[in-house]
Image (cartoon, rainbow, N blue to C red; front, side, top):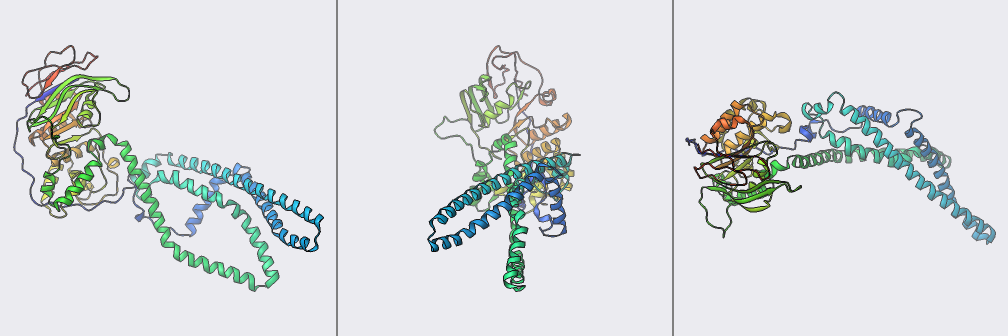
Length: 550
């Protein structure tokens, strides 16, 4: 692992001042950038619903003799037999009255034996009914999930749904959660649906036989009127349930994004950062400059030895190992990073370059030694720029100003020129047109709509806007050309940032470095404020490094 140190030439840059505007809050993006439920037509019981339901039934019952069809016929037989037994159980009390009235002990014993048998048979049939329904649920869910997966992965449909289409949100939720609910509810209603036509016909006949036409017409009229009233009352609730399902899908997708982007989120101090900014925003009553000045999450602790205010990191004989395996990466490293003395860490893959940044950011604990971060996290201190950028929902402005959204003032337009200037410097002028302006609330996922190079450019636009004293870059230009990389690094130095950068491209050395120094055989000490060339090596390997002051 090689470490280079430089002293950049400082150039002036306009300061940040004047009123700024706040973009409105963005809605959920849906799974992988799907559109919200508001863009869909309301749920209705119409011909389209019936056609879709029949298509689902064709998937659940693919033909004869399929397992679903055989189980359905078995369920029909069990349900009919169960109704017959229930009818016999229902007439037993009348027989008991007759037996008890006549005091016939022999018939009482016979009737009791029949009643116990019917109750046992009825319990067995109910259990068998439940078992068949559960078997149908498993088979239906398997068939429907496999069918949807075959459609989902055919011809890159999954790409179209996630990136190109805006009318279907959360397809992952529909395939997993909605299919499970649909199959479970349908299987639980199967026995009732099977037996309902028979019981309806039987009791209609009995009602007509007892009361004539008046009885059946009154009963059916009551149910029709009740259904219409229920539809009027339940329609608003149905739309709310649809919206609830969408929001639950968005909520789960956001957690998935945090899981996938756990390290970039940790570098930005997600969670701890939001609480601090909210507290600052309330405390400063909307005073953007004062709130931003007060942002200090990781300042030096009281009681520690006083250090110069121009020092950001101080490492003293640090030894670092991989937390999961214990593999030794760095041994006895001493490093002091001060303002104006940029450091570049180069080396082969697996030599512990990013691991050193994890230690600086507090994500990993060192095995031995002392690590101190002597500046705050934020615009007045240090900002980490991971190789995989971290984005949130919302407008283009919100991506550039992140994480200052919570303390960003609600009005003003003086900041627009600065933001557009930084987007231009990062080579993202066309993105402003694609997003429809700084404050247009987009419904896409930034991870899907931007290329890897554009994501890294947007991260640098954010870095230019924040203008911290120190910028920690973890291969932040790996998806960009050498020319663009050179220009972005030059702009960071022009803005007065001290860079702690990681990379393995030889072009990074050409940007600011030249020459070399001899290797040390084992661990060494590096002082960023020293003009003396020194070497450092990773323990247990033939790696060597050198330091070159600019």
